[in-house]
Length: 321
Image 1 (tube, rainbow, N blue to C red):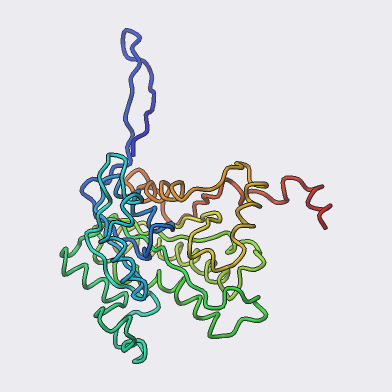
Image 2: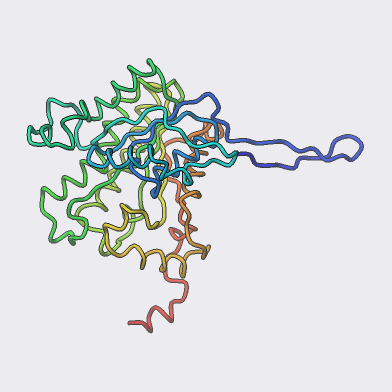
């Protein structure tokens, strides 16, 4: 990723051009939460590769077989194609269920499930150990958390069970804490941790239920605390990208993603549809040395919608009532 920046003229009136690049050449990245080519996780992995990084991913065990098949049969070749014509190659694909920290704490019925039992240690701790065995320690420069799940996401808060609420918190927020705990020692000093959040952490989004709004709020709070703790302990940076609505396969679970996208297009300062690549580019920037002074920050990549207090066309909105 290269941006041309015109500077002051050279002697003789000749303009000078500097190349300011997002350069991750020689860096290694791990993206947790890639199981297809349709979400932010894959887009971020691709952007990091475009910038020169070697990329490994963590994939949910029940989806891992299909993901591996798509890769081996070339079904994702078009999506994996980089700007120079080469293809995104994953150094390592490890099973990862972010609901579980260590294998000894996983319920037996899950460990014996046919989609899990042949995957070995699929916990966050297991993923960290596999990466350390494959690459040594430290081995990463960038770690991205692209994980979220709310088993009762379609339930209003008043109809959300304790189990559903805590399930959302576990998979969507605490998993990032656990990831930083276990991958922190695997990351070179001054490395970058990044997660993905959503505006429901700050504003009410009817229909985004099951405790997911609470989980995103917790994730953002944890980002700030971990920025301090991981910064002081390892020199790592910890940031969050708050992305606007995007019609990934995972987002379709909330059931009204199409309406949300349309609403943003009508009311955000920039009316074009959000592309996964735009979120990925912001993630690549935050993961790069260009962002060396940025930590504990939530960066909104939503066409500016977060800045709006009322709909762009208030009269139309009131008339619709």
